[in-house]
Length: 336
Image (cartoon, rainbow, N blue to C red; front, side, top):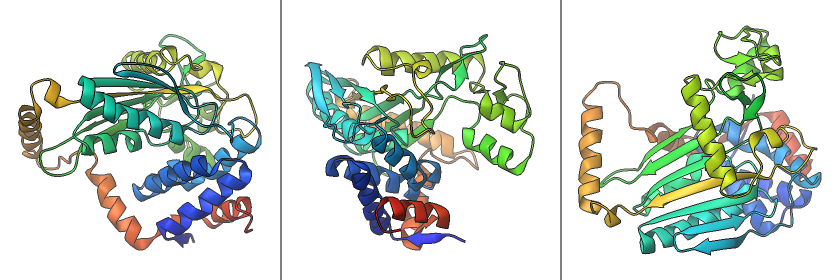
């Protein structure tokens, strides 16, 4: 059984929980809106289930609830946003707002977010830029969960990458992926159910391949595509952290512990105005040519379409939240 919420009602409840834990109204509102968006996209792992984690981070000082994001440095199309140790969403919104303006003025813009926290669904931050006619990419690092290829120590996070491309007609192409071979959630489910996992998904704490889900949770994820995935994870660490001065994955404690040192991870966003290159008409024609070629193969779907279909259905049917989670959120909001 699950409880079902209208999106606005769940957003309000989560906002109150965050504020009661010590987040500013602006931080709480930005965070709750992003979590509802994840639920509507059919990604509950990045939705309401994050509220106990986020509230714990704020209450225990892993995230600074009073933080107000600010522009710490800028030059032309480049801007550094300091999240001040707070939850990520308000800072990312400032960064992408700056991107939209700077990319239109300069043709291309890059934003770094420093001293940040978990930024949820990566595509959430770039899809609005594509709707504004820009090509947009997002990169974010996370606490260490994967080794460098050939190593036996968790150095990189699962480090999501997202990209969004506008279209002449129809919704943007939206791509979102993490760089581990499989989502950690699948291993968590296998551990809960006492089932083995396939070889190639994870390593134990000593860096050895394992089929034991519980040993995998104590160990590390395997990079997607082996060495290639590890190299991409390295790229994300450097883009998101070296340019912003943020903490690398191996310097951060797990997201899933409420206490611990501040995460201080980073995000990076890139926006490109097609009009500054071959031109909007040429770009959009090329996109549609590629889309038509892809759709000529039966069974192909355009990335992002499934999430948008989920939005309509879930908004209509209500957001399903397990009763124990709904109770926790209500208690955090002072209503339990």
